[in-house]
Length: 272
Image 1: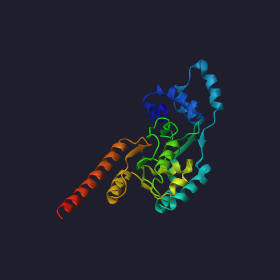
Image 2: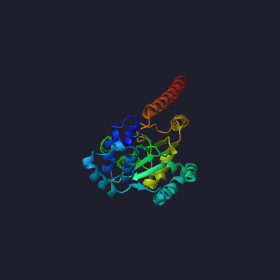
Image 3: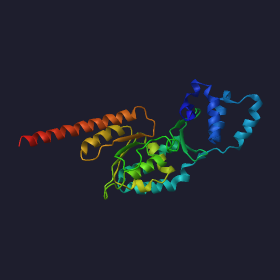
Image 4: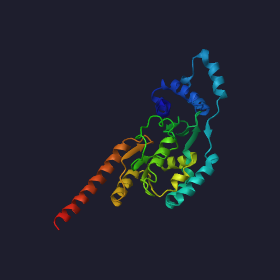
């Protein structure tokens, strides 16, 4: 996975170029691999291997996927989201220009990968739009129901599917709330292109916080809805710096406020 996170650092660490080139080839991403050779010729293999590498690169597909190819999936997701959250759906539908600077690629194993690209510069790879690599490492409690959860980033894959299933319809029609935070609206727009989330998106138990102030509005929502279950499990699929710490702080503040309110009620009852 190093190439996904370190590609932006190659300007300052040219020795990473060859390693990154190999990783791109292994993922079947011919376009970014050829681009890397153009921008960083020092990544070229030794002279005795160059013909073999050139042949291998020429045979690799570009790997890029057009957003327009996935329009039907996006439209289906928006239709589901519009029921419980019409304003968010309208906002996402009305500004697809957010995707203009994002390039979508599909690796050999089918994982959707996303990168930002500025002209003349190496692309910056963002965390994948699927939990393929995390599914084997994320440890959920064995079996049974899960508590309310907060998810940073909506991602395709087994992990989020399992969380959604194990928080749904726990008693009669009661389901635990799911809090979904996405600091970058462009990444949410992208995620809604790559997988069919319609069944989940139409559920009113999802509470959305999208934008740079997502954590602040999440904390405000917890304060404004004191009867809503607080999230006890937190997942960050965006690798945002300090995100989990910020969420823990917000939940801790809400818990303290609820305890203080309960103490006031108990004290009042004791005086009657």
